Length: 65
Image (tube, rainbow, N blue to C red; front, side, top):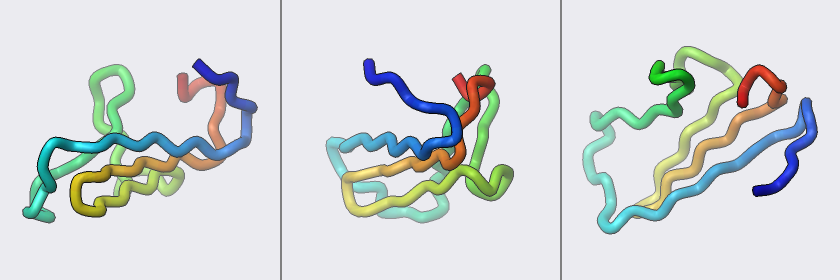
C-alpha cells in the first residue's frame, strides 16, 4: 500500500467485467458499511466510463481511513 498525505486527493479505480449500462444503478463508496456518495459528500466524486469506475476523494483526513 502507498502512504497518503493528509489534505491530498486520492483516486481509486476499478475495472469491471462488463459496463454498467444503466445510470440508475447506484455506485457508492462505503465507510463503516455506510454509503458515502457524491450527493452526500462534496469531497467524493464518482465517474463511470464503460467498464471503468473512478472514485476521487478530495482533501483526505486521517478519519477517512
